[in-house]
Length: 286
Ligand code: PAF
Image 1 (tube, rainbow, N blue to C red):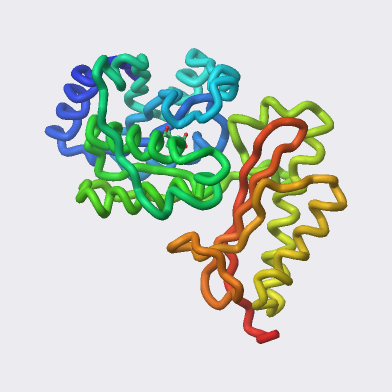
Image 2 (image 1 turned 135 degrees about the vertical axis):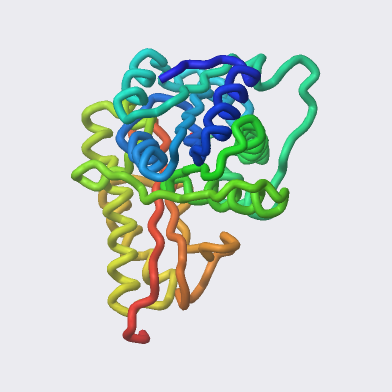
């Protein structure tokens, strides 16, 4: 596995692989790898002849400087893990390589960027994500790029920007990888203290309660969410949002009549966690 810092070197390697007939897979990351990242890389490895992983803690998507400076970073460990799953290139550029002096452009996906995470983290968050992902897709020009369903809103925004901007990359969204107790894997989990770590799976339990309620035939979104709200309240967790929204438009739904995204964000022991589940209406009308 090669570690490269410059776009020129990255493009040379990708060009060589493409000329040799390889399909190019890209896994964009901010590092601090866990099994969720490694699953994306394994999937890319299975499906592509040449796998690039980008490791870049993108400053423009952080609304909070303290959050950016606390973001876990350990490139040597990440490189070892990426090598272990057969990644070909780890692209780990400096900030100035991605945002050179005078950088002035951005990508904004209107509408989808506004609710949920957009409301909580501010309008700059998804502008930062959309801009850096567009740049990474342009730098690598992969056939396929892999993202996790855990960041459901991000995944939807990336699919939309690729469609809107005619970027010829297939976006593959991979299932959320969970700890045995249900906690969605996240780079932030390492910051949970033992008490918070015990409480953190409550988010997944609340989502599962909504899923079960819908599967049993509850079509009223408010009543389905109430099943999860009770679990959160019992654990003393006040979510930033806990919502049932259209899985296409992210608009809130009152009735669950088709595939619906149930999304949650909450701070547990001072660590902000997000999770979600896609629910499908059950057969018994209520
Ligand atoms: O999901 C992430 O890790 C980041 O938002 C991404 C897609 C790598 C962009 O910085």
